[in-house]
Image (cartoon, rainbow, N blue to C red; front, top):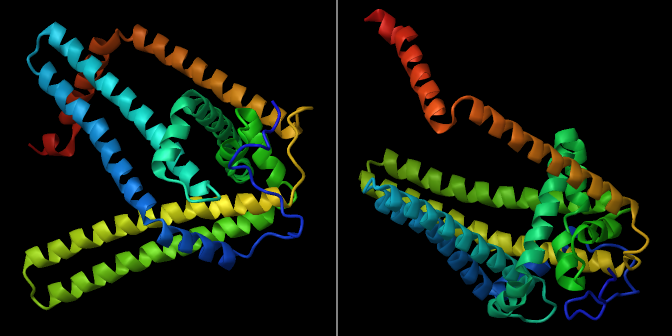
Length: 329
C-alpha cells in the first residue's frame, strides 16, 4: 500500500521546521482551537450521552421482555440486547472517528462531515482498532516497559489513517516512523500534557470539595451540600470533555510537526516495525484463541451454565457454614 499524499487531510511538509514545537506552543494552539470549536465539544457531549443510552436501553427492554419467562420471549430479549449493543458499537466507532477527523482537519470541518467520512470506513477503522489492541496486549504482556514504548511509538496511528489513508499495520509503522529518533521529545510533550490535565482535574475536584466542606462546617442544609457535589461532578465531566478535544488537537498538531520534519513513510519494503507489530498481533490473537478454546472446554467439563451455578451455590453454602458469624451462632 502506498501512501496517498493527495489526501485532503495530508500534512503539508514544512522544510523550514527543524525541531518540534514547544509544549507551551502546542498547548496554546489546542486551547485556542477548542475555544473556537465549542460545537465539537457539544457534539462530544451528545455522543457520550447517546452511547450510554444505546447501551442501556436495549438491556432494559431485553430484561423486560425476558421477565415473562417464556423461552421464545427470553431468546428475543437476548437478541434485542445483542442487536442494541452492536448498533451502539457501530455508532460510537463512527462518531469517535468522525470527531477525530473534524478535529484533525487543517481547515474548519464539521462533525457531520467527519461522520460522512467515517461511515463507509467502519470496517477499516474496526480492523485498525483490533490490530492496535492485539499489538498492545502482546507488548504489555511481555513487560510494562515494552508496552509503554509501543504505545508511544503508535500514538499517531489513527492520524496516519486519517491524513494519509495508511491502513492496517502500515498505520502503526507510519506512526513509528515519524516518532523514531525523537522518542523522548514526544514522551516529554505527552507527559507534560498529561500532568497539566491531572492538575486541572485535581484543582476542580479540590475547589468543589473544599467549598462543600466549608458549607457543611457552616451548618448549611444537606441538600445544598449535596447539590454542590453534583454540580462539581458535572463541571468536572464537562472540563474532561473539553480537555479531551484539546488532547485530540494537541496530538494532531504534534503529528503535523513530526510528519513535516520526517522523510515520507514507505510501505515497501516492509519496515522492521511493521514486521514486529505483525508478530505481536499474531501472538496475541493466537493466545486469545487458545484461551477461548481452553475456557470453552473447561465450561463444557463442568456441565455448562447449570454446573457453574451449582458450583457457585456450593461455594456460597460453604462460606456460610464456615464464616465467623455462622460459627458464633
